[in-house]
Structures are given as structure tokens and as C-alpha cells.
Length: 259
Image (cartoon, rainbow, N blue to C red; front, side, top):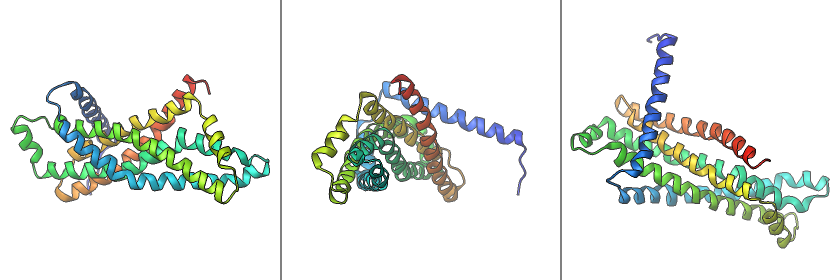
């Protein structure tokens, strides 16, 4: 087993961050340059958005249901069971909806992008595209980034609505809350800052998911084994970056909206 010095490891990490930053920046700058691959973007939007819809709906519904179920006993101790809708609404819209949707989409699509582009890389299809004068980042990366950012935005909205519905089902069927009371408190609890926070995060998460998946796919080496390794690394890196960036985005927006 080869032994690497700490200096070499540090250089590799810095180089990886540099390569990723260049790829991510290029994927955004390509939006304003021709040619624009609208057909590829629509194809990726269908794969990412429609394909991820069932798992996002299931995750959102049962997250909202569990929130209502777990917090009902605590709220009941203080005579505040009527605030269940407010708690579910704030938790889903501000935090759990975007984050869980991002993690589910990362597990499904970041791995798919890494494996697809990794297979193209090890079979030299990427080199063939360059030989034909096609920019791989514009043809392969930018459509995935745009589609992920747009579709994760709408998937998070669906997750929030389904999560509120899951909380309502538990509140109405098991806790005996009045439907009008639940939806009124859920609606009145939300401020502009809450909604903005819940809709801003998915755009960043979508960018992270697509750029990370494409980076590891285009960096794959070593045949099929390398593709499998890149797929695993893409899911792990995307999930960790989503959680880390969620903290900083939340802290920034809480400061802006003075929470």
C-alpha cells in the first residue's frame, strides 16, 4: 500500500477544490453563452423532477405526520395542542422540507449523474466530444445544473404541501383537532422570511447536487471500479455539503430577517 505525505494529500485536496470551483463557475457562465441545449435541459428536468416526485412525496408526507405525532404529547402538556399546525408549518417550510428533499434528490440524482458521466469518461466519450469541438461542461454539466436548480425549487414546494397534509391527517384523525383551526394556525404562522428561506435553499441545494455529481463523474478514473467509487463519493459529498450550506444559509437569512 503506497504511503503519501501530508503535503501531497493537502495538495490533492486543494487541487480538487480548485477543479470543482472552476467546473461550478463554468457551469453557471455557460448559461449566458451559445449554444444553449434546451432539449438536454428539458430531458434532465424530466429525469430529476418527475423521477424524484414519488420519493419526495412519501418523504414529505411521513415527515409531517411524524412531526405532528411526536410533538403532540409535549404540546398537550402545556395545553397548546392547537399549535400543532404552526409547528408543522414552520418546521417543514423553513427547514425539513428543503433539506430532506435535497438529501433525497442527492441520493437519487447525484449518484446517477456521477455514474453516467463517469461511464462516459472511462469509455473516452468525453474526449470524443472535445475532438468534435463540443464543450463537455456546456453540453453535459450546465443542463443538469439548470434542471436541478429549477426542479428542486418546485419539489420543495410539493414536499412542504404534502408535509402539511401529513400533519393534518394525524391532527384530525388521531388528535381530534378542527381542520379549520389546523390550517389557520399553519397559514398565520408563516412570515415572508420563512417562505423566502424555504424557497431560497432548494436553489442552492440543486446547484450543489448537480455540480458535485458532474464533478465526480468527470473526475472518474480506473474503469468500472472508478465509476463506482465516484458515485459513492458524489452522494456523500453532496449530502454533507447540503447540511453544511444549510447552516450558513439559515444563519445568514436569520440575520437578514432579524429572527
